[in-house]
Every structure is written in C-alpha cells, then in structure tokens.
Length: 382
Figure 1 (spheres, helix red, strand yellow):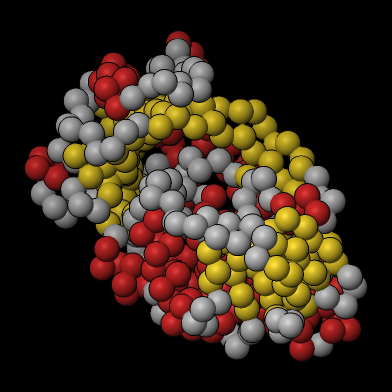
Figure 2 (cartoon, helix red, strand yellow):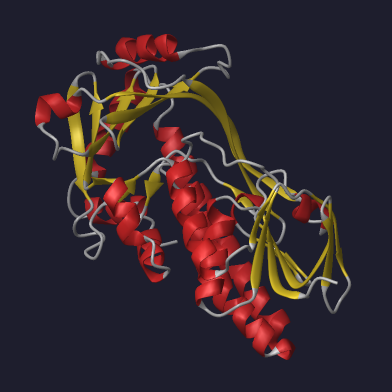
C-alpha cells in the first residue's frame, strides 16, 4: 500500500509546483498529481512580480529564471500618439526593481526541474483525480492510477477544480466579463531603441486598450480588448487592430493569436477540513495587469507555514487554516478591485469620458500618486 503523504497537491501548473517546492524546501513530504501527460506550450502568463521573485530566490530558482527573462523596469501610457505618463518600478521594489517577463511554460519547466531535485519522482504526470473524500483523519483521492491518501490535499487544479467541487465550495461572481485578443510578434522596438529598452506600453485608445510587453528572444506580447470573443481571429487580424487603434505597425507574428475571455470569481471559502485551495481553483482574477499567477504564488507562500503548523500541532490546524482562508480571500478581493479598475480604464472612451480618463492617468503617474500606483502594479500590497 502506498504511504500516506503529508500533502498531495492536485494540479502541477505554476502555482501547484511552486507550492510543492516551498513545502519540500521546508521538509514536508509532498507529492504532485498532474492530469496532463505533457506540459502545455502556451505562453499565457508572462509577468513575474517582485514578491514572487523573492519566493523564487527562496527555493533556488531565481538565478536560472533571470538568465532567461526580460526585466521590465518601467511602463508608459499613451493615447492618440502622445505619452500621458510613465511609471518606474525602481523605488516601489528596491530589491527587485523590475517585473521579469518569461513565457509561462518556461517558468513551469524551471519549477518542475527544481521539484524533481527536491523530491525525485514525486511529480506524477498523466494522473487524473476522479474523486476526493475527506475522512476526517486523512483525505482519500481516487485516481485512474489507483488510490492516494494524504493528511492534507491542496486543490491547485484551476478554475474547473475537481477538488473545489468535491469540497462543496461554490463561486461568487465579481464584476463583468471582458474579451481580448492576444499574440506575440517580433519586437521592432529593440531595433529602434536598443536592447536595453525593456518597457511595457499601455495604449488607452478610444476603441479600447492595447497592451504591449517585451519577451525574451526579441519578441513582444500584444493584447487588445475586443467587443466580442473573436475565436476565429488570427495574427493578421490582431496586427490590423493594433495599427487601427495605435498607429503601430507590428512585425512578423511568432505563433498564432488567441482570443480569451476574462471573468472574476472568488470561492466562497478556501479551505474545508483537510482540503485547501490555491490559485485559480480559489479565485479567478483578470490577467490584465499580470496578477493571476502571482496571486496564486502568494497563496502558496502564505499556505506553506500554515500547513507546517497544522502538521506539527494538529490541535491548531483549524485556526491556522482559517487564518489562511481569511487573509488570502481578502487579498483576492483587493486584487479583483485593482483588476476591475484596470479593465474599466481600458474600455472604449470618447468625448468627456476620454478627457476625464486621460486626466486621471496623468495625475496617477505624477508624484505622490505614482509611487502608490507602482507599488500596486508590482503587487507589493497583496
């Protein structure tokens, strides 16, 4: 019979694997069950904020990540061909005065490699969890590869979490739904301004926001708000939309464009007995502003000591996990408010609304507000 693990994490994406690494470094007996046979090669999340960089340093991954990543030290906002304002992250995060940009699949690969070093053979791919039962003293997982038992089970299995559903935890809707089109292109800005110019650009245009972020390998990520979910649109459609709104002619595409919808939801609670949720299983926050993956990592940082305490002193388990639930749900609400503000600022604007929005942007990028905004965008308060 398989041993009873201290912790089993369902979901081996960036949040689940980060938590596994943090727990392993802390001496916890942990295993990861991942449904996918092969890792996804979709780029998805790219921004890694200063608090997450500190955590990556703590598990021994940061140096390898920074060798591959682009460092974004500043951002600017533009409209109608003019710069409205700019932000520097230098004073907001003195230790790591930048946001690191790296495709999610590369970040995941580094985390998996590190976990394999810490707990060889404990990352199990191609394992589908079919049922979760909290028996009081332990949790029994039924999978297509047999049964697994653990003292605590962590749901890191995304927005359609099997673990959350098994625990009977429901969603709460936060705000309205928005749609976007995203794609990567060769970065012509490097030729214009030199290889050291790595900055994000937000185009708050009349027809809706267009965002631009540098990536490794001389690429740039472009994201544009759309009126509907344009599932049939390609890179040429995105390039035409970017040119129409901003006047920027992007270069050759790198891969195909993809459409996605954003909705914000929060789980009614983040733990039930011996079952705990992290990341997208616990909250869906708009990726606009780069908060989703980083918020999940901050969940992991908060959960690790709570689990250690719960395992060491079982009589305190309910209290420490309730504290995790309270603090991280509050953080998710704050992140949702910030993401909602970001999305609202990026919606189409004309006439009086356009003038008011541009005036607000100018004010927010000047002292003293600019330091607060820089701290918010680097997730220093979550």
